[in-house]
Image (cartoon, rainbow, N blue to C red; front, side, top):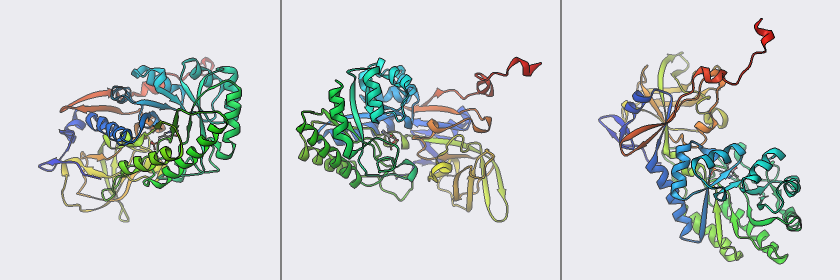
Length: 418
Ligand SMILES: Cc1ncc(COP(=O)(O)O)c(C=O)c1O
């Protein structure tokens, strides 16, 4: 991972001083670099489309801000959506239904009806869902989510492709499910799997592609020809300074070779989320308190697990710098902790930082994926702002919530007010 540039000890982000952005918009704030977002999309599309016909369905769970979605819509991306909320958000951002694929898990009839009425392709996760969709949306376009018993990910909590997880249809039941889908009259388009999120090696994707290719061939023998093989998302990114990014070209060659060697399928679909957005975004937070408790030193900041839950939830690492002390000598080790009343509320443990002081702006790196989209109102803290930077200008793409917003949908029965 490469570090940002600086000017006289002041950190720069997409040509702007980080601390100026924080001053203008307040903290905490997520700040996204539009050009980086466009580049990431082009890099992943470019690597795979050199090898075979490629469709990218951005997994919008990673970051579903309307401006981010709009940029990816302009780039030509499709969408992987996991809820009716995500489907509607992407339609609002300008995607047409035919560019959205819905991959739900434990899907209710109401949601299935809503998605199917919109004409969105559905990735079937279970035999129950298949039978219910046959009644709700007969003849729908479908693909089937397979559990390939191949897993990969930065944490056990995000490995989805191994036996024993709740996702998909086991590979050994796939043929039965597809022939049932054929008998039910579905418009069968593809096969799908998602092995997990944040894996850093190519091998599991090749193993996954092999499982999907073998099933695809067996389907050919019973007269089911598929248009695409969808290997899901999961391309990892380096979060630490000394880590190297995954080699996308190598991944593209190895995975598409497997598909081309083993099947006649012409199109590969990928659903990257993290890869496209992670390094586009900084979370800026202000130091509000510095505490030396003898055993440990703490930098208290105004962003916590409510703003960025990944460290608390997965023990994830995010690099942190003090924006206007960039490149300065680090003095001591600190835990960077937030305002939430939990001892698990932290952004970083044991980081060497250059003499943090109240008022300093801290930049939390690689916060674009599963950052804002997993933030919450815990401790009655309103969700923070989001800003987009392009061409030396910063624009607000989400206003901060207020405490009044938190009350908006709540009701106190009249009898309690007497
Ligand atoms: C079905 C599916 N596709 C794609 C993704 C995106 O994964 P990533 O952000 O690691 O690329 C996920 C993430 O959980 C997923 O469940």
